Image (cartoon, rainbow, N blue to C red; front, side, top):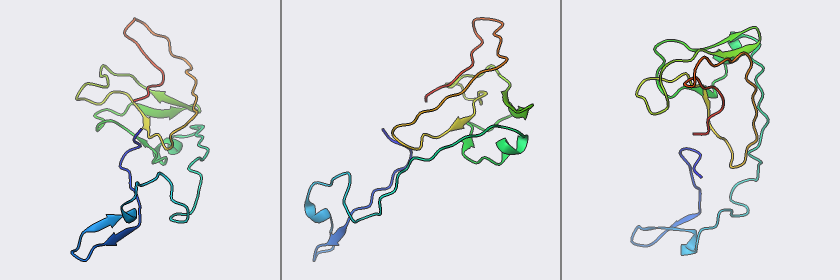
Length: 129
């Protein structure tokens, strides 16, 4: 699984004719003790969306494309997404607020309040993309 642009750090030496050799030409393991300090990538995240500032200042959110009309707001302590006619494969921006996966294993949850579909074409929920 790829989490975006990944960086790998391995010891490199140089041959006399100027070629790089990674990890003494041995198979490169996923973990090399002592190369980087060990730190858990896990961290708790929570956003109660108490005000519009909670959304506007949380730079971990992004959109698939530039919004033409704002669809994400905060009202009465809830994140409100106003739907539109676009989906993930359209060239226009769907009403979709995204956060990147930050680790290989994550647990997350959300609740939908006030969503009342008026047809079979109305959808709301989580998307793993």
